Image 1 (cartoon, protein in one colour):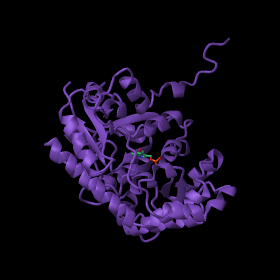
Image 2: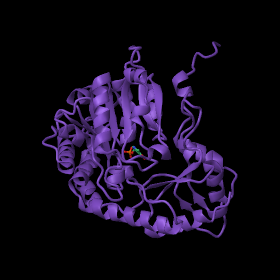
Image 3: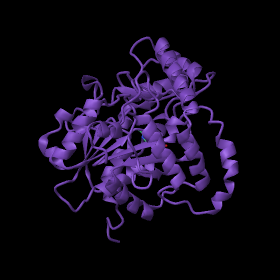
Length: 397
Ligand SMILES: Cc1ncc(COP(=O)(O)O)c(C=O)c1O
């Protein structure tokens, strides 16, 4: 047998996924008895489904007998384009050339790297991403044959990826940059100037931008600005070099629907559509019908927004210090030792939270910026958020 014949060196570079690591951390730890468990580990919205889901599914049930178009049916791309125009005040978005559907943005954020990185071009091997990050960015970059470059986000930068800290030669070698705004897990939100500065760097050094804006509708006070909106405001109506992704998982609390949008530069959309015609991540047609409704209705989004706001408020009232994040439903708490705290929270209070180190990686200085943090998701409403804070306050490491 030839040793190494079946190795997958890129795959082997990836660690276990955060939830698998969490399961390992908590294996053998007995949760406190007599307390109803609280799972704040996963970022899965657990709010009621919008009222239109069941009737819409029933009406279009027969469409399960057709293959869905991978790029999305025109009716759902139109609904997505109209939402982008309304939400960001855009002059126009062409549903045929500037929009694609995703089977949930997770797969799209992963596979976009294969459309944007050419591993044979040795001068452009890098993909930049925030650290801490949604782990898919790292996996997508590595599996596309790129070298991840981590933009460490700490309290010192108010959790912004510091564009000035990136050396000039790194910018020159960059194929594309992942942005996460609002950021999972830190809650940071990009402002207009930050996005504009990144677009200028992209022009100067010839790279692309992929903005993951999945949490755009979950914010504390100010509605987050979007990358396409910034493009338009600087006269870049074709969104050149830019792609955004958004999802119904968070906006509509429909993570099981597996429906997201991809929009932006028509040239990149065409390239990505070609890749996707081979990989085939199509959302079934009846689910695309539900998605079209969800992008067209703001009432249910407003109801969810209020719930998340009340949850954040309730959490911080009890927690007693710090303030809610600008965006997302996550709290990112410095607890000294995230892993030890997560274990103690489970054992002493029957609460599951995620150690911050599982959402970040060691950067160039050898430090993992998430080590002292935990992430908790406020996805069960206000009373549960208050109870979560009460229990976390009592954890002793
Ligand atoms: C930052 C971020 N982006 C993307 C996703 C993917 O969501 P979905 O695949 O449900 O669209 C998530 C899910 O947790 C996320 O936290």
